[in-house]
Image (tube, rainbow, N blue to C red):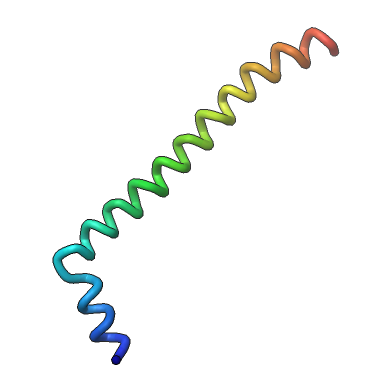
Amino acid sequence: MEISALFDSLMGTWGDDILIWAVAAVAGCIGLIAVVNVLDIFIGSGNSNEVG
């Protein structure tokens, strides 16, 4: 099986759906990391300023 034939079969009707879901998953992970970092800044800064 050639690589081009495999690529053509993957990028058929459901290839676009996989690409969209992959981009959405990466964007969701980045957003989740951003929210966790913001919460860590707000929670961590309150505790560190009182001690310091």
